[in-house]
Image (tube, rainbow, N blue to C red; front, side, top):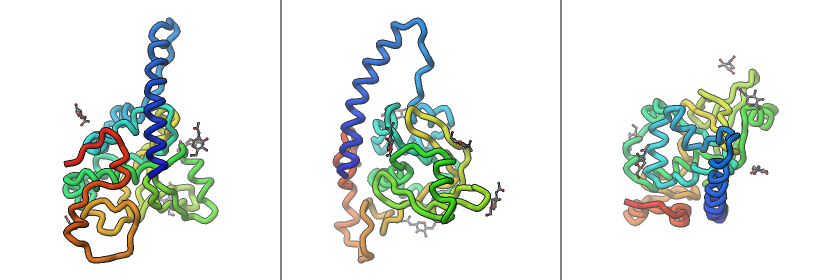
Length: 215
Ligand SMILES: *[C@@H]1O[C@H](CO)[C@@H](O)[C@H](O)[C@H]1NC(C)=O
Ligand SMILES: *[C@@H]1O[C@H](CO)[C@@H](O)[C@H](O)[C@H]1NC(C)=O
Ligand SMILES: *[C@@H]1O[C@H](CO)[C@@H](O)[C@H](O)[C@H]1NC(C)=O
Ligand SMILES: *[C@@H]1O[C@H](CO)[C@@H](O)[C@H](O)[C@H]1NC(C)=O
Ligand SMILES: *[C@@H]1O[C@H](CO)[C@@H](O)[C@H](O)[C@H]1NC(C)=O
């Protein structure tokens, strides 16, 4: 949680910095093409379902900066169509938020970074920004697969400011007990859900993020 609070704080500082910078750019006759933010790359890649999901959770600000340093595994629209219980997930903004944050890893990783990190063992894990493990497989031929459903990379190494976007063929499903009942960011020992559990629609992460609205 502290990590995310930090990200958000840095994000707001960066935003004011970027605004100052863009004023400078406008007055320059030798204007260089501005780097794209992750949101702009999602738009140019036609990742409309992922964009809609980001929008509905209020997580947009996390993806608007160009100075952040993330790897975003952005699922295709088809990947969302294939996702089990997709309407249940979209109906609960807290559940959706857990899902979106699970597609994001701190630090910008190209495919070669991932291959070199995991090729020896062939399997390992990356930690998402909401601190959940993502399974990573690197086959002997260098093919990268992610998650228990073995998502493959559809479009690789898209640069978005300091972040890297890897478009993936399947949505990564968070390894969270009772995920569909509502967000529980920290995996818990299996226990019978209570009606109180099901009613909790906010997480400690979401409550620390500004501009997040809850149904
Ligand atoms: C995101 O939400 C805003 C309003 O909050 C809306 O204007 C915009 O069209 C939405 N974008 C997408 C991709 O859903
Ligand atoms: C989730 O999907 C599975 C498989 O399609 C289905 O059996 C289950 O009832 C769904 N659960 C909810 C809460 O929608
Ligand atoms: C990107 O993140 C990694 C790990 O999170 C860090 O080591 C590195 O210094 C960061 N780079 C930049 C340019 O912020
Ligand atoms: C991704 O980028 C890295 C670093 O620039 C490069 O080594 C690698 O070949 C690229 N992968 C693909 C599939 O383009
Ligand atoms: C890489 O190897 C896997 C099996 O480990 C295979 O399914 C896949 O088709 C291979 N991909 C390429 C590009 O050769």
